[in-house]
Length: 325
Image (cartoon, rainbow, N blue to C red; front, side, top):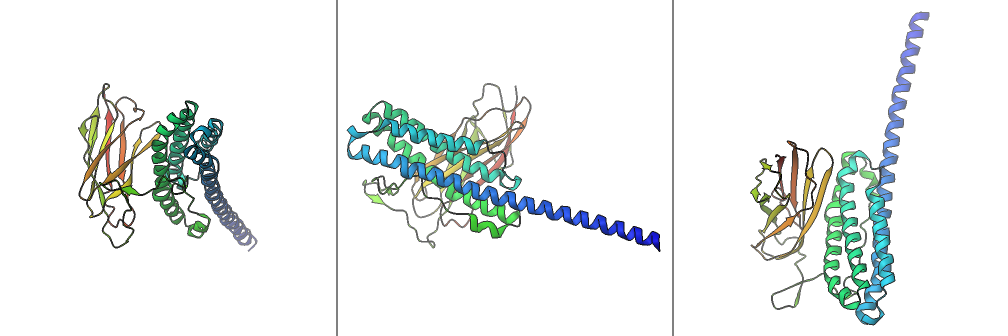
């Protein structure tokens, strides 16, 4: 009886230790996820403050009176945007469930930092150069807004669901756009053929559908599930053709190409500015670092989805590329 009692006591101790350890690990993971979500929200809020509070006043003053352009203020905004981007890029406390999600935020912040840096550089050259650089910067800012809204937030919700933390979705907030484009007179509306402002329909029942028609790498077609063998002289550039199969025009369609080499995951975004109903457009995505010799890397290409789109099965194409001699 003493022996049986000792064995039972040992089993009970092991059970307590095992389940206690599991509870501690689960609590630690939950804390890490909640900490990441709240930290990411703070990072995006800080980025929005840079645009809406620091940069917007500078742009508004320059638009009203080009002689009042404050190049130093633009430079401070560029430094703040770059700081936010680097902090997100170097964040080493990203939970495994949020690694892909985090990349969307890094991409959006990187676009903002680059655009603001170019805008500050143009400001050094005077109001004329600043005015010429502003439209391109605004389009980049709108692209970053679309990445956050259409990619980062849905991916965060999915990651929380997969990790069993749906309750933490209360900590997810939709951040403000980088700037108040309407207030600056830089409307987010598209323009029709006559040059008049035309807003895309917001009716959820209106059919909306974009799809990937074709993808080529270094001029060679990449089909779904296929492989393209590259030579040393090939330029690692993806040409992505997107089709608008709906009956309404689409603007600001996000496109992203992801290349997974052994060294790193590389994701580079692009955007289709406007597509008419039934039309198509091709964007080139480049800037990737090649993989090792004889390495086969996975490729994922995604277009959209656009708002109210129901069918997303044709929005993604996957394949591989092999780096040859």
